Length: 403
Ligand SMILES: C[S@@+](CC[C@H](N)C(=O)[O-])C[C@H]1O[C@@H](n2cnc3c(N)ncnc32)[C@H](O)[C@@H]1O
Ligand SMILES: Nc1c(NC[C@H](O)[C@H](O)[C@H](O)CO)[nH]c(=O)[nH]c1=O
Ligand SMILES: N[C@@H](Cc1ccc(O)cc1)C(=O)O
Ligand code: SF4
Image (cartoon, helix red, strand yellow):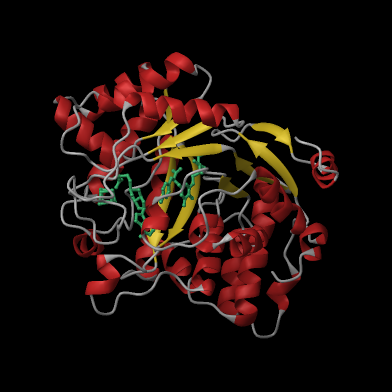
C-alpha cells in the first residue's frame, strides 16, 4: 500500500501480492476465497488481524480490490459540523475525558438558540449535515432531543440531522417513559435523519464491564440500533479499539454488525475509532491498558472490516481525528473509501488528548484523496454524491479563487 500508482492500475481480479512466496498457503486461500465471493469467518478474521509483512500486503491488496468492486475509485467526504451540545455527564465511561461534572469550570451546555445558531453557521459554510451528540446531562428533560431537532428543522428544513447515539436514545426514552420504538418514531417524525452508531465501543460484555460502569449493554445497543433501522432510520456503525481488547473481540464485533446488517440493511457505513488514550482515566489508572491501536492495527482493522463486511456494508470510513490525516489518507489503499466529515468542531478526541485539530477543510480532504490517485467526491450523509471535487476546484484554489 505504499505505492499510490498501484491504486490506479490494479484491477478487479486476484492481486499479485497473493503470490508472494512469504504468504502462507492458509492466508492465501482465505484471501482467495473472499475474492471469490465467500464470506470471511470470524476465526479467519482473527488470523488476518495478526498478519505482517508480505501477508499484510496481500490483505490490503485484497481489501483494495473489494473496495473497487463495491464502490469504485471515488473517495468521499461530507461537510458537517459536530455540535456537542453538552459535556456534562455522570455515566463514568473510563475511556472518556470529554465528560465533565456540572460544577467543573469546563462544563458546557448549549441552549436551543446556540445549537440553532451553530447549525445555521454550518449551513452558511456549505454543510449538509450536523452531527449532534453529547453527555447524558442529569437535568435535561426527555423531550430535549426532540426540541433540538425541531428547532433546527424550523430554520433549516433541508439540513440533515445525524444525531443521538443509542445511549442518548436509551436515556431519552427512559426519561420520557416511552419505548425505544415510540421514542425513535417521534424523533423521526420531527425530522431526525440518521443516528451515529457510537456507544458500541466493543460489543462484548466482559470488555464493557472494564470500560464503563453503567453503559448500555451489548443487547440494548443491538435492540436500539435494530429498532431504528426497522423504523427506517439509518445509522452508522463503529468500534472503539486499542485498549483492553484484542483480535477475538474485533472479529466477533464485526461478525455481529454483519449479522445485524443482513437483517435490517440499516447501516450506512463502518467507522473504526481508535482509542485516544492520553488523558483518560482508563489509561492513566489501569495497568496493561494499551495506548490506542498501533499503526499496523489501524491498517488491519480497516482492511479486515472491508473483507468481513463485503457485500453488506459498502462504506468503510477512516477517521482523520483519531489517526491523523496522513494515515487516514494512506488507508484509501487498504479498503477505505470515505474520509468522514470536515467536523468544524471536534471536541471528544481533543478532550482525550488528540492533536489532529478541530476541522479539516474540504480542500484539504480533496487534496489528500487526489494525492492517493483517487477522485474526491463530496457526499451527503446517505452517501449520495453531491459534487465532484475535481480539478476545477483544485485550479481555482491554487489560482486563489474563492470556491
Ligand atoms: C463521547 S460519546 C457521546 C455520546 C454519548 N454520550 C455516548 O456515550 O454514546 C461518543 C463516542 O465517543 C467515543 N469516544 C469517547 N472517548 C473516546 C476516546 N478517548 N477515544 C476514542 N473514542 C472515544 C466513544 O466511542 C463514544 O461512544
Ligand atoms: N469518525 C468520526 C466522525 N465521523 C462521522 C462523520 O463525520 C459523519 O458524521 C458520518 O460519516 C455521517 O455522515 N465524527 C467525529 O466526530 N469523530 C470521528 O472520529
Ligand atoms: N462516527 C460517528 C460519530 C462520532 C464518532 C466518534 C466520536 O468521537 C464522535 C462522533 C458517526 O457519525 O456515526
Ligand atoms: S462516552 Fe458518553 S456516556 Fe460515557 S462518559 Fe463520555 S459522554 Fe458520558
